[in-house]
Image (cartoon, rainbow, N blue to C red; front, side, top):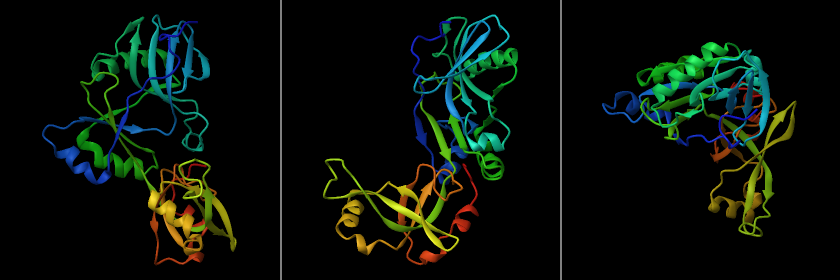
Length: 289
């Protein structure tokens, strides 16, 4: 089978990160950059090539993840979807294997990536209707629903975040993205040294983070996101920092106490190390596994 697009690597728009504190601007701007918002699912971005009785799903790096046998729908197509695959979140939500389709860039052998998103969504919706399960359309909402969606769906039901788009934009225009961020307090156990020429003998690479579990201090993560000044200070005077409490942020909390995509935030001067427990971390919610 020949895919609808020659290149196996998935081309996708870039993102503009949006701070939830700026939502009032999105909702009230008379000429907003984005006019629609979608719920972001915690899956992998996939390109789905439809041809005959087969649907091939490729990851963003061009790896063939799986192929599905489907009922022929009469046309070839290239859909873009969030593929619910391999995450504990998709399992907990009973969504494993579902493809949430949000775009279409080729239909019947014709490239439609230049058309407005609203037109591409119409083409995607027609294909999803013909394909049936496990294909589902991602729902769109007015930008005015942003705060309501965040409070009810993202926070209330533990979804990953929101994506903001322009309904008249071509494929490739930047989208906005807001992810739910969790903050965790850790004990500094030490540092990982870097072998990068820029840092060797001068700066640390990351901070080793620990929490107390059953009375024992355990190593759960390595936290990056440090400035060069912080890296240098930690390398030169490690004893000034080891044993102190610091705050890190990430997009999800793992059940071992680690964060997904963690970044160092700052030192937490008014918290004792023994208060940094695995139990307190898990009380935050947002479990990824």
